[in-house]
Length: 149
Image 1: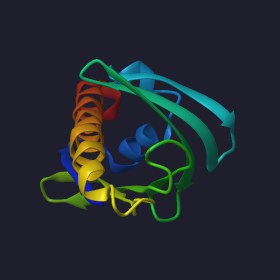
Image 2: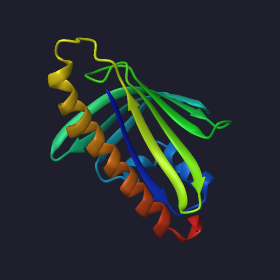
Image 3: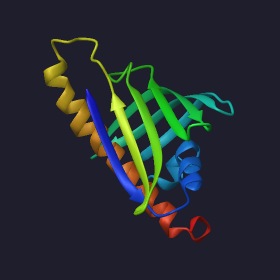
Image 4: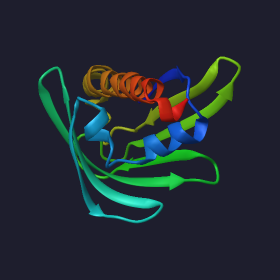
């Protein structure tokens, strides 16, 4: 499975990156995120239980987050639940139109026979929808805040 979401944001690239990397902030600025619980916490690596909602359906997963400050990327590796093994990469690219923020999801389903059935549900219904809402809400937060202009 390969799915991606992107949006142009009008805020400083590093402010966008730091907001995306700051999981503690997510439930405060992203209304579809119910909570983020830290199992391990570090400067550039965290182990977290993440919980969101998609159209009233609660979803929860465990991820390792790696903050790559050198390459200005945020990586997630899903460790449990239906998305176990998924790799997620957030990138932040300066463009003439603004900062292009992309979230790419890559996953090989463990059960290849169920993949054609499960992929549209997990990939399109849940992941693509939640990632799109995450980008739209983060954009609104960053662009409405005078300190990010």
